[in-house]
Each structure stands twice: as structure tokens, then as C-alpha cells.
Length: 159
Image (cartoon, rainbow, N blue to C red; front, side):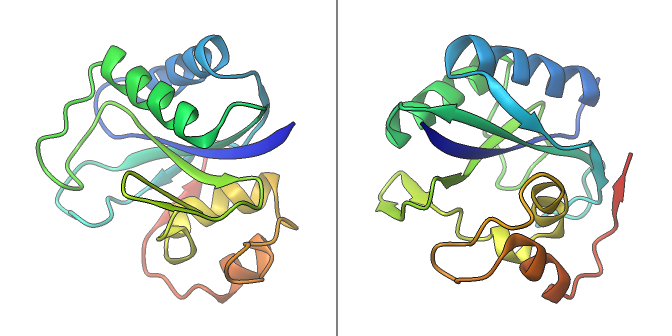
């Protein structure tokens, strides 16, 4: 089984409810969640005039190929009402593949490890909670180390 780390985020409506619903759908459509981080409230990143996000990282264990997981999580986003109108705009739900085991994938529609995760405290904080010793396959550093080294003014608060 492959450990796959997913980042969930929501900044519209019942954010906690949307994260719970996403986890339920991930468990139904993709694989059971083996571990989940706490929730983290985060200032909007990229488009800073948006409402604050709730973020959470989950780990699933699966044999599904990464491209199949991507198709399934994109379908979950659609089922939940996600609309892609503005880059970094507000959203009911966002689900990103952070890691697919230690694989490195560079395809037109899928890049893993997620190319920006080491620059985002809202990703590193929940990831470090559940996988501090996981080594980033491109950077060769533990997640906890990446989190400690990141200089960020973005407010990220564990709930």
C-alpha cells in the first residue's frame, strides 16, 4: 500500500462541514483515511482578499495509481459544488495530492510532490503534525525541518 497525503481546504460556508463531507467521500470513492491532522485556520494565500481557510491533511493508503486518485478527487470537488472561476479564489472545497509515497510525478495534469508545499505553512503545519519524519523526495528534508525553516508571515492557527 502507498501512503498518499492529501491537503483539504475550504473557505466558504460551513467549512468544517465541507471538510467532513470531503473526508467521507474520499473514504467512499478513493480509500479509507488512515490518519487526519487537526484543523488549521489560515489566512487566504495567493489571493489575500478572500475569507480565511480551514485546512487539514489526511493520509490514505491505497494501490490506486496517482492519476486515478486525481480523477476521483476532482470528481469529489465537482460533486460538492466546486467551481473553478478565479485562480486562488474562494472555494467550497479544494483537495490536492501532496505526496504519492516517495514517487516523483511530472505530467501535464499532475505534479507530485505538490510543487509549492514547501512554501506554504498552511500545508506544512498539518502535514508536520501527522508525518513530521516523512522525507520530501525532491528536497531530501523531513517535513518538520521544512516547516521549521519556512519564514512566513501567513497566520496559521491550529484549532
